[in-house]
Length: 101
Image (cartoon, rainbow, N blue to C red):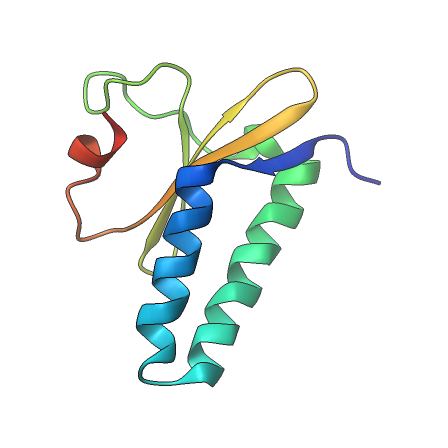
């Protein structure tokens, strides 16, 4: 039974769409696999959002962000009493500090 609702914020939704489109240009099967992996992350966050580490606030100028890395993607999220907010999903080679500001 889920404990938290996962809310995908607009920038994260845009990230998902861009990632899917980029990968689908090469392989729709691979793009679908990445989406499946993303939804598994969301399911885990519904149950265990505190399982993943908080980001060092010196490295990222955002308070209370947590981070999950799945393959080459970094999921940045925040938690409140009932919700997990997916803020961004960014490829690990990108300058994510700049993208989070």
